[in-house]
Length: 529
Image 1 (cartoon, rainbow, N blue to C red):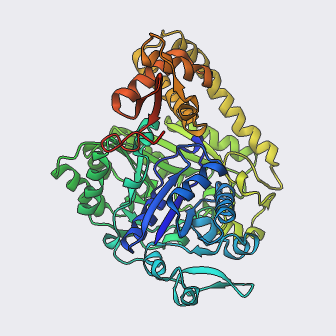
Image 2 (image 1 turned 90 degrees about the vertical axis):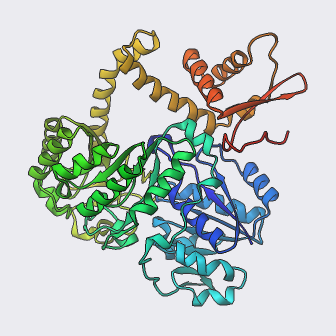
Image 3 (image 1 turned 180 degrees about the horizontal axis):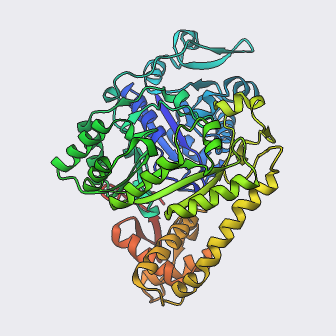
């Protein structure tokens, strides 16, 4: 059986990294005996024509994808277009959005045949051999589908007790060199599950309230595999990495014992860390830690079931900085009880922490307590346009704040930040930045350049370039500068780096050169012309 899994488009501002959930699904499909292809539109432009061509080449029996709420509209559109182009394929989707919006999704989108609900690896293991025989679907736990015009949801599948039984994510199916060029960290998980009950989060319902831990040995095996691809920066994306001090110590000890050198970051809760744990993490290569602070008002934290205090936040930040860790605090605008006064209180609190911080706007995702019990809160959901659920725009109102007022608060802080950056930006483009400042702005603009190249297929669109006596890099850089409108020096330096690293190569075609992104710089060959 051939299965094509689609990585749906994801915006740059959401820091797209190699799609971890999809790679776990791909590994489960491979373990079930399927031939799997990942078609990645995170780091390449999506068009229906490209999808059709890819499906015609691979000729899959199954087309699947996953999504979060924000990119669900794009993901379901890809499923619709795949079904139109190849009506005989079985289409399926997984992920948090569809897991908690089963009835609406299957009712509204007849092109989608099947939903994998919740944790999907064991379900896929059982489902893959039965996909071609719909009579068997009723006996498979953890899925939903249509039967005789009605939506059928099978019995709930138990969570996977031993995460070490899962195959490692199938990252070998990804266009690795593109992700290396993009420069975001690779995400891994060392555990699943979260004991907390925050009303705005669905992690507990998706992967359970009791943390389940992978063995330190298997985690570090995966880390070594990731580093072998050329990555040097890893983000631990657990729901609660610091759930167990003993477990954090064991993992850090395994990293240190095996002499694995890399930079990593993690998310944590302020009431689960202490100086010893943070020092251990730092010694094992952790350079930054993120805390979900959410609000500077204690009553709002209580209403949101956050389970932390302002004093704990201050203490955790102090300990983290003392351990030498870079700290990032995230806040949510629009939680129940929010007002102009609490926004001002939160902003004052954020500034006293003296760390990097950012704001998101509250988004009532399907599956959250907030959405399912909205009548209990002084809030009104204004839209079910899922494309607006990116937490970067207000989609709710309360009796005290309009969506325009919430947006204005965040935008004012953003503009304040941008104003501070103006002079630094001028120095960067004039080549007058001090070294550390230059590296920061170079990295930011290079990332934007790379994402532009990928999301618009600019290198591919250039076709064959005539060198005309100039250096090949020069003609390429000139063409890319014209196509992107970005700073010529940045373009030249970035392309030179990608060529030297093996991410970007050229092949002789008639009287010129055709450039192409490699899939994996260690394994790649030139694409067919």
